[in-house]
Length: 345
Image 1 (cartoon, rainbow, N blue to C red):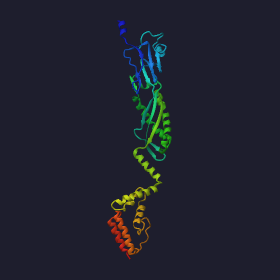
Image 2: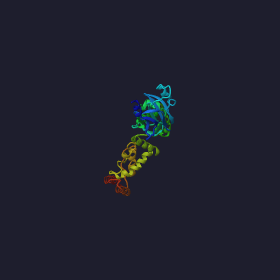
Image 3: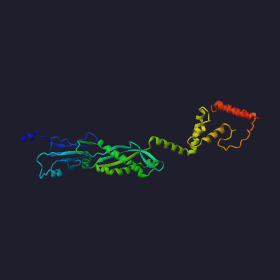
Image 4: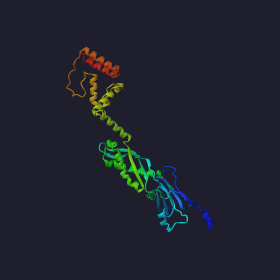
């Protein structure tokens, strides 16, 4: 009966892992009821490491190469199993393979803007995103802290923890730097280096090496970016005074198309710039050179200065032309006409 049981046993002659994807980081060799024979072959390929685990304890670790399993190649396992000579019978042991290939182009980013204090704008909310790369260096630490007894462990299972921890340090990096938002684009490499220095201890505790960490973009939310773009536009045009003049010139054709002519131009263009009264006065003077500027100090009332018939006719022709262009309404023309006729010599 013992002979039949021995014959029915399945023995493992070759232990190896051919990775079928680029996402698996740890994989347990399927043992089932099989046992490892004395002299079995272990193949560990480049970018792999293999670990023998005896009753939950990490034993021997193998780097790339081909090994014949004996007490000489399994010194820790030999000690744990109290083998004082070459083992003659098959044995059972959990064997895990670990991928040491570099995991590149792993993305991170702030799901929500982070608020920091800025020298130029006070409090601002920023977004940031970038990439990082890492690889496994210590299979024992990785096994004991992350993968454990799982049949396999993937990058996807780990990435959420890494990404969220990176994002959690973004506010600290920006705040500690003291760099204004306007200058942040020119300091992205420095931010990436500082963030990498903060993250390396955590990666090491997982048995990983953080190979690179880059900040690719730092931006404002859309509504704040629109405000910044407007401010930059004002500065590019020479300041607020030049911007106001530009707005006035842009508004004249629009005001001419609106009902009421240029009467509301001063208020429409001047809102937010404190220029309403000046603009309205200037436009009124342009339409009627005989009228006093609105922003001038009102003199003491004096009788209206008489004007000749030729002057009245010339003024009425100009005003009539403005009506034809839609700049003056008919009612405004009639009012000016009545005022000029009263002053006729």
